[in-house]
Amino acid sequence: MARNKKNNPFAALLFGPALVVVGVLALWENEGRFNFYQAAKDAQVAPAGDAPVGRPFAMTDELDTQIPIVGHYVEKFVGFHRVNRSAMIYSWDEDKDSDGHTTWDLDWHSSVESNSRNSGIRQTLRSDTLYPPKYQLGSLEIAAADIHLVDAKQAIPARRLQLVEAGRQQQLRLAGEYFFKGRGSPGNPQLGDERLQYTGIPNAPTASYFGMLEGHVARGKQYDISKSFLSDFIQNDGVLHHLVNGDRETALATLKGYFSKVKWFTRLGGTAAVVIGVMIFIGFFASLLYRIPVLGQVVGWGVFLISLAVGLTLSLLVMVTSALVHHPIVLALPVALVVAGIVYLLRSKKSAKKNVENALSQYQQTHADDGFDIDGPGMSAGLAEQTFSNLAKLALEGGLSKHENKFLVKWAEKNGIDADRMKQLFAQAKEDPTPTQAADRNDFVLLVCLAMADGTLSMREQSALKAMAGRLGLSKGDVREIVVGVETGELVPV
Image (cartoon, rainbow, N blue to C red):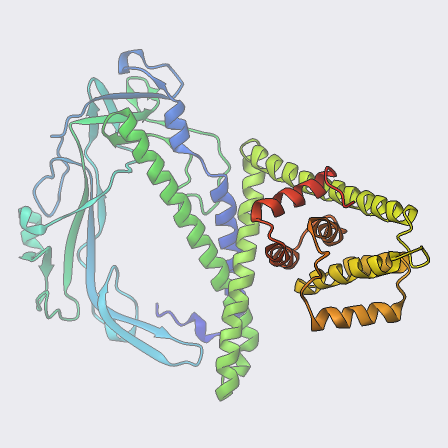
């Protein structure tokens, strides 16, 4: 039939969520899919005569590469595990958009769509998958039924094949890489013309089998797995019945690569289904705005971006959750490392904050006892203001957080500097950001303590400290040493 379901907006309303559900189910099952590579790797290595009964085994031997595959339209194939015959017909394809506009496409298709322009057209050639009657690996007979083949396939040019009577009766003729049937030519096909193309998986003199014996014939092992209506579509049947070219190590490498490819293709396909489903669903509600010239384009991009964000987030959440449910042991170590890292960081922050608080409290107490106060004798007030001025200049280099700035003000108040004087000192610091000669390594240590009053150093604070360190002639190594010392409590301002 013509693909006109999008012409019905209510069909789109249902189709979108349905597509999301299909994508989510595919992603969920995919993360817990049967790992045929691991099953093959774990299978007991044994020759056919010593294969364990009722348990999977693996063996490598010489393969009979001359067992023929019946070609039907052409002569028998030799040297292949499997041959795929693809039949195409040159016909019309009809598509209707949501506005009822019809688009016609005349091209090669795998089947004839039922529409007005294809009236009277009938496909006489059929696609098929062709196997040998059996496989012979050394003394082991392997059943062709349900065999799993993962080696790469290649095109079989029609010029290498010979037509048999059935092909000649179909009036097939050689045309480049295809067998052609019809009134036209490959370069100028006509409506109703047909063509055949062949691809196959070549075999090799040495091959490896992974599966299980049933009697004297290898028929594979069916593992007990949870299946859904999507299992066959995503190639998750739970069967270990694999024949692979090469010795055991080569075959396992091929299986591993194929397993990874299937898993990633399913991830991409499932994610695409979720995103498209969300887009169709949201688009249903935004469709009324599309006809507005400028707003319509903006809405279109908005729907796309929202669908992408929601779809990717949902897909990632499903994959991670499914992986945790299906492989808790495998993910236990990474999760434990992440949790341990978070705990370590939190404890380090708490410890650093406590060490800084102790250092600052000790600093204040020490200088209070020494008369480091506005009411003290001599130049104590001047020294307090000078230290505050230096700290203010260092702070203004990159700015302190609200918490740290509050501590600096509190420190000044405890040392007898009133609010008006602090404003004056801050104003002077802005006009002349260069610290006085009295600014030294100890001032820098004190500033690091102030910056780490919350237990951490932000990127902004790190930049400010590095800039000030350069003014004081401190290297990056010195800065790193001071920061670590303050964090651990080994270094305090004096």
